[in-house]
Length: 63
Image (tube, rainbow, N blue to C red; front, side, top):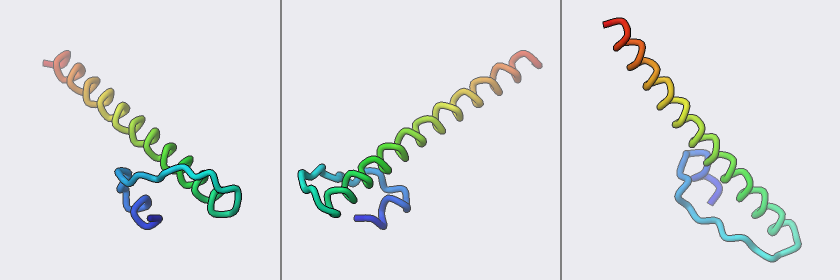
């Protein structure tokens, strides 16, 4: 399960657990990490769209 997250495979489902031991803590940490990676990727995509849109506007203004 762990090797796919660093490789960028965010499609894997990690189910929450009710365990109160180290496995439960690790599962919660992985879910938190995965959610943050997903949010960071969304932000990168939004920033790229904004840069692309600005570049198009700049090119149109220069033409």
